[in-house]
Image 1: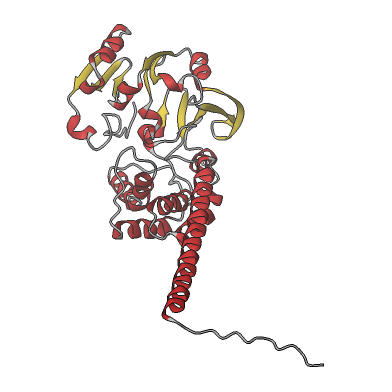
Image 2 (image 1 turned 180 degrees about the vertical axis):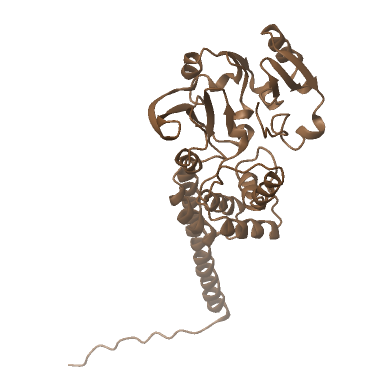
Length: 339
């Protein structure tokens, strides 16, 4: 019996079929490109979100891998590079941070100097490291021997330190970190007094130092931004007491409280400041003596009148030429000898 013949199909490459094959190839390539773009965009977005989440949680060690992954997908994304640079500064790796900021500048990105986040702040930390050497030289030429120099990764800035007689307020936040304070406690640089570490939960450029939102006016009088006296922005205060004799002592953490409660315990009445007054440097005056203050006129008449009503002798100065560099009379001065 004869097997049935299997018909043989012949394919002819016509112009129409070639066009169809070409279109299919193009569509396949486009689909591959779009798919890869979608995948890379998803990975990039997930990495950026993770970096920001870890940054907000203060987990600096977890910021770096997430930021680096985001930069692998988008090397030109300045936001991830800023986060990476800030993390490097926070960990004390200023040289690596400098390289990241130099790349940002080479790509045309210039961080704004005021209130745009942490980038510009940490850029200054990396770029201004030499100022410590200059300050040490000037102090030595004046016959002043520094007690101690904070070592990386510790950081500590003068605007976070406020002496108050038998106790001191030491701010911890954006520019002064826990390690810097730990070193100062270990080296006993504060003297035989109570040390109140004011921990800033906000950590933003517009209130970068303790002296940008709080000011001592007398032993029983101060001024403070209202939001710092209650709610989520109120600092926690860790209180350290010297244990031992004045010649041989260590600081011991004795308790933790809230900032407003600590001020009440010290018998300090607080004149509240609005956020608008804070932006105009109301808290950054220079106290010459108890209840004798040099303030800036732009802080406003209402603020100056509240000070006068509290018995503060206020001299207001037009300080705009210097506040343009972000700082008031307190930021522009340095006490070398107190007597």
